[in-house]
Structures are given as structure tokens and as C-alpha cells.
Amino acid sequence: MSSTDNLRLSFEFFPPKSDEGRTKLLAVRDELQKLQPEFFSVTYGAGGSTRDNTKGIVKTFKQDGIAVAPHLSFGGDDEATMKALIQEYIDAGVDRIVALRGDMPSGMGGAYQMVYANQLVAFIREHFGDQLQLEVAAYPEIHPEATSYDSDVGFLKAKFDAGANSALTQYFYSPDAYFYFIDQCDKAGIDKPIYPGIMPILNYRNLIRFSDNCGADIPRWIRKRLEAFGDDQESVKAFGLDLVSELCETLLDNGAPGLHFYTMNQVEPTATIVKNLGLTD
Image (cartoon, rainbow, N blue to C red; front, side):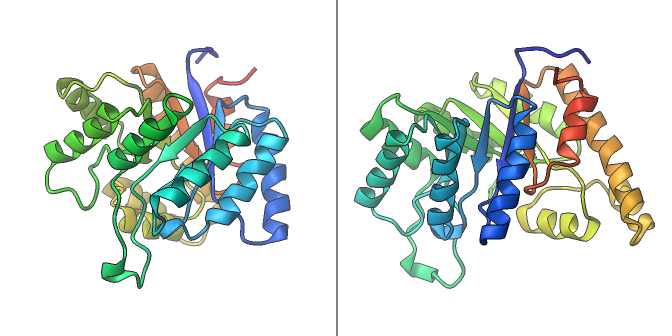
């Protein structure tokens, strides 16, 4: 595949909890920056539990001249706190935010007020106009709490109607799930770009745990192939590298506008996949 300027590349990190993790993350960032992503994104724990870590990493990136988008959800915060945080990001030079409903933190129960992503998008547009590019989440295999396929597409449309610019998807391993989803979004009147989320395969057990928790489907043949490798990590990684490279190529060859990688704070195998696709000079 030839390199093209039209395809958007982005990489997702989670905020490290230690100084050692932070040092490692900045080294990973510098390696992945060589691949010329449009931006990095930094996640936000359930209920905003990693807010200060997220903010610290985002500000460091901006000080280093790196494009970065913090993930943001209301969590347990009130409107004044949210406005102050968003203004702090804007003052630091942030021009993009990933606006999410966020996960219910454990133990919060009825004391926690859920603010949906379309409400957060509308809140940001009301108070900050068009100062920020707003990314939202999309679920090609449908959000695990959705009552129906059509209702979930409707929720995505509500985020765009509220002022979102584009969407990043949950990861998946069946390209047909993405293409069918895009077709249904088109029929619902969604005309904004929806970037596929890509999860490289590093560890079989972790992948299964993540996927079962978030509702991402791992096709049975992939599960069986990975199970067969047992503790042979090299074979798991080699299979995953080929599988995910082929998935990305299929997506891009059939019109996906770019790729958003869930890097797990690692350089590899994301960097090799991007190079396999010819997306770097």
C-alpha cells in the first residue's frame, strides 16, 4: 500500500501511575511520533479517576510540541469543575478532546450522575464554541449496554448532531462488522468520519479479559488459533502481527479514513504494523 496524506493516524495511551512508567511512556511517544500521527490521545479512568495523571501527561506533550487529545468525561464533577478543566486544556494549547460518557466507577452506586457523551459534546459547544475538535466513541459491534443495533446508531448520531467532528471505534477483528456499521450510519444520515480502532495482539489472556469486559468480539477461529499457541508468546505475537496488519489493509483498501491504535503504551507491534501498511516515509 502506498503512503497517502489523506489517511489519519492516531495513537492512544493510558496515563502511567509511576515516574518510571512516565519516563517509559515519553520514550514510546518519541518513537511513535516518527510515524507522524495526527495526534496522541490519553485516556481517563472510570469516573475521572486518573484525571490528574491524564492532565499531567497532556500538558507535558503540549510543552514538547506534540499534538495530544485528552479523553474527558463528567465523572462525578460538576459543570464549574468541567469548565475550568476544559479551559485549562485550551490555555495549554489543546485543540482536540475525546468526549465520552465514561465508565461507572466501582462503589459509586446511586451517588454517581451519568452524563452521556452527546450531553458533554453539547456542553463543550455551548461554552467553548468551535475552539476544539471533538472525537466521540463508536461501537461497530454495538455497545454492550445498547438495547438494539438501531438505537446504538441513533446514540452515535445524537453525538454528531450535538457537534462532534468524528468518531473513534471500539476495536474489532471482523472488518465486515465495521463496513456494515458504516453502511448503517450512512443510512441514518451520519456523514462524519468514523475511524476504526485497532488493538494489536500482545497477550492472549489479557486480550480475552479486555474483550469480554468491553463487548468486543473475538471470532472463534481467532480464539482457537491463539489458544493453540499456549504460552508460546512469540507465536502469539507473530500471528497477531499478520492478522492485524491484514485487518488494517482491508479497512484502508475499502475506504476507512485512517486508523486509531490502542498501543497499550508500547512501541511494538503498532510501529511494525504501520510500516507494513506503507503509511510512513
